[in-house]
Amino acid sequence: MATIPERHADNAFVLPAATVAGATIRAQNAQACSPVCNAASGETIGWQEHASEAMVDRAVHAARDALVAWRHSTPGARGKLLRKIAELLEADRARIAAMQMRVSGKPPFEADLDVSDAIATFDYYADLCENTALFAAETITVPDKTVLAQRTHEPVGVAALIVPWNFPMVTTAWKLAPALAAGCTVVLKPSEFTSPTEHMLVDIVSEAGVPDGVVNVVNGGGEVGAWLTAHPLVDKISFTGSTASGRKVMQAAALDMKRVTLELGGKSALVVRQDADVAHAVALAVSGAFTNAGQMCSATGRILVHDDLYRKFMAAFETAVRALVVAPPQGENVAMGPLISAAQHARVQSLVAQGVEEGAQVAFAGTLDAACKAGFFMAPLVVAEPASDNLLWREEIFGPVACVKSFRSDDEAISLANDTRYGLVATVVTQDANAARRYKAQLRAGLVWVNTPQLIFPQVCWGGLGLSGTGRELGIAGLRSYQELRHTVEARA
Ligand code: NDP
Image 1 (tube, rainbow, N blue to C red):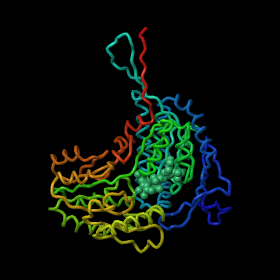
Image 2: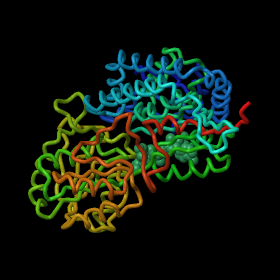
Image 3: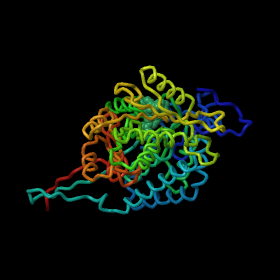
Image 4: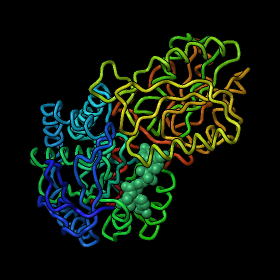
């Protein structure tokens, strides 16, 4: 927490506390705010004002006021606006990716991928809006022919969207596009670490012609999320973040029976069978564990390798990890950027220290490029054969740390992979079609990849089992999660 500086000699930006019904709301000078850092240099590049409780209330009321007109607009009209948002994002792609790099320190290919993902999501829900059958009343066959039974999918109402810092704009698009398609109005709370690109997205939403009040933003940290989730006029909460915060969101939602979608943590497994191509398995292990510096709910930080391949795999994995260029985004061939903040860096370092104290052995680590003089960089690190109760094997690390364990049979691999209270994703690498079928059926996860990197399509739902959350984003289920299923039964004339 800090106090907003009066004037910025260094041209640092100040992001407003809130955007409500198209109007920018500034905090008072004395009000708390937080710095926005460049994760690759540690420098403060701007400030993020925090909304007050009264501003959160205004934002929710604005969303409520805009709801009637928006929910009664046609899906086709909403789809045209979503399409326009996708087009404007495409036109602004370079500027948005540059901001993504400037704030999060992501390598160019990752920053660009984030923008592509957001565009694909808006395009997909624009397509769904053109599918009139998805929004029309459906007749249900019932035995009594004297009545007409129908079901409809109505917008839930005002949706609070709380998004984290690891994929800014992406997780927002996954919530915002289906919410708007469904006819909901929203109050968005971005992470205070990465709000600049969220502001760019919201500017684009407005430029596309989405009416004022349909999308409102409240910024800040500390209590803003809790004020929003507790607000009685919020009908639905979609939250992405830690399981600990997800629990609080669910508890707050229970008071008013608000609808919730929670995309939370993970501790996912990648299984390398004895018939796997080792080079391919290593490529999937590297991207699964170290993309976005491991700050992914889907990170496959538990790598299970068949005994027959273990030595060969570890040798190739070590070569690959040592070759990863960890550097600021301006460097050449950068594969991995920094962690998001000093606090996250300290948290990951502390978890590693605790794991080592508990007996985990670091097998090898990568190196930092000479350009990593400041910022929140951490070299990728691989732990070999940790005990099954070691915290590095059990807990979500959210940093560039992977654990490798050997196994001797499919039964053992499946049992180890499923030995977690999370259940977000899993990957299996095998050339045996029968084995692939078995793993798809028995790995306990919301999404299982077979021999592919972590491909995400807006058509394919995202979400986990157990402590990984509840509900699904993306796909048609993502749209339905912003709708209430209703039925009518009427006497035929
Ligand atoms: P958290 O997910 O724990 O939470 C921060 C967010 O939750 C903020 O937006 C905060 O808003 C909101 N929040 C907290 N309490 C409540 C509440 N009662 N009601 C509504 N909103 C609430 O993230 P951190 O940044 O603290 O990261 C900690 C760990 O979380 C990471 O190390 C990682 O393990 C995990 N994480 C997982 C992510 C994922 O994609 N699954 C993404 C990011 C982090 P406010 O501050 O305004 O209250």
